[in-house]
Amino acid sequence: MALSLIAAAASPLLAWREPVYIAAGFAGVVSMCLLLMQPLLAGRLLPGLAPVTSRRWHRWCGLMLVAAILIHVGGLWITSPPDVFDALLFVSPTPFSAWGVIAMWAAFGAAFLGLFRKRLGLRFRVWRLAHASLAIITILGSIVHALLIEGTMEVMTKWALCGLVVLASVTTLAKVRIWDIRRPS
Amino acid sequence: MPGLTFSRRSLVLASGATLAMGATGLLVPARANGLVPTASMRGGSNNYRPGAPIVDRIGGGGFWMTGTVRRAGDGAPLPDQRIQIWAHTTEGHERDPQSHGATLTDANGEFRLEMPQIVPAFGQPHGHLAYDSGEFETVFLRPIMGSSKDKTLAAHFVLQPA
Image (tube, rainbow over all chains, first blue to last red; front, side):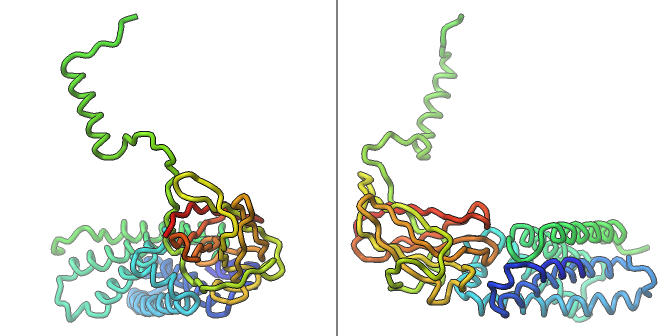
């Protein structure tokens, strides 16, 4: 994660970008790093972390992810309003922006389910399936979004980070078996 | 070698398929003078600043934007047409006034304007061009560079009278 941030920070393109555009780009890279943390924490795959700590971090990383997405989109809006307007309305000429917008709404949905889990009154496994489904859409959308973009991340570390996100997600899915929504016996 | 034979079934199928293709527009009859006008591209007009001045060069140069302007139908080259150009370059963002400039086509309907190197912005290395002078329908183009290391980018206009 640190490597991908350092590699992005070494980009010569930064010299030709405004601070707010650079901040928006980095908020995107930070979001992808948080998307690696989320499945690791949800699946309790990090060694030496008590389940309750893992869950608390998952909550904080989720809130940070929402904040990072807002900074990402807000910063791009300040840089070039018409381009972001097009993206949000799904009429952008860039194919990756639609994936990013889909991922954004899925992430907001997953965060909403996380915040209101108790008040929604869903059975736990049904809630988990819904939350994880939105998380999967977020992750897939974000990865396609990032891989199609040229200019923000360094290519090798981008593919490596995306690969790790997929690996972590698949491992957690296999461990938690979210599709099993029967009542535990 | 057996000759080409049609059974009744294959004849019906073949003629039916041909009719279907014609109906869907897949089978287009050859059209005389068929040079169709260029449609504006999605996002082409983003960060457009109308009335960019005609310049010899945008900023320090080093990169060439080239292209042609022709008339729809007969394809005749259109001289003295004003093409406005802007992009995110090493010298400024798309929105910055110094990133904008215009040039005129020559007698062959060709234009080329030197400008600073285009760098990737919003995920793609791309330029913006506009024909917006009134005599013909307005067209906004947003060509994408094959590689961000390219030193030139081309865009072609086919205009129809307004």
